[in-house]
Length: 301
Ligand code: CP
Image 1 (tube, protein in one colour):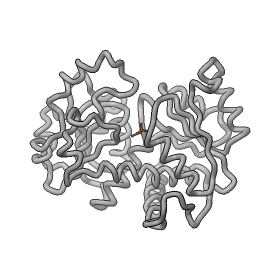
Image 2 (spheres, protein in one colour):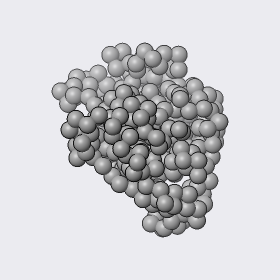
Image 3 (tube, protein in one colour):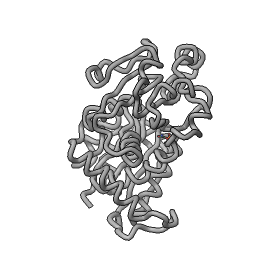
């Protein structure tokens, strides 16, 4: 079974194949109306379940549109509407869904839920975000960087802010795609220890971004964080805001990324988000192309 569960559990050649395939599929449909189908219809006759136990705009719409462009059909399921949210086991849910659909994408809280779904499903399972990682996002981000600046291998990527689940997938990608990753943020929000060795830390954000090819940030309060943490997070992270002064320390042609949704003028200023370094909406678009390639890879079509 070819699941897409994380970047560090997918081989380097497979990751490269997915990025190349995404780029080719994007090129092939350049300029076409979004509602038109691709010339290739590899998902013709395929049904895809998209399960969301957390809110989503980009993941939900990009998977749904991507399946339709490739000739398949989707059903979007919310965790609370399913028996899964009312006591049915993950294992039984996985076995039942596998009788109806050809592919399962799940966005959930605990990584254990994703892994149990993958263990018991007899169809491929894709990680649409857990509290620990967000691999589809980072595949789109790698694609976006390379679209603008060529190979990411050997480049300097700086993450400013919370060492959260999106950072974790960047750390996994740093090893697989062979780029240098620097984390700059306050010690209480350091990434989890399991990521040690995949990145370096520089507490001073201005020093961290010196010579950076790419500066990345994310929301200061993630979906799985208690809202009661909001004020404390703001106090901890205010000095790590990506603004014009910070970007001025990076390379002149550096890129700025944010996976969105953003809290404008908290983690990044609108001046940066809408400015010449920013590729945030290319990132969002490339979720569509990257995930289409991931689905094809999972299904071998
Ligand atoms: N970046 C991202 O995953 O966006 P959504 O939460 O809107 O899916």
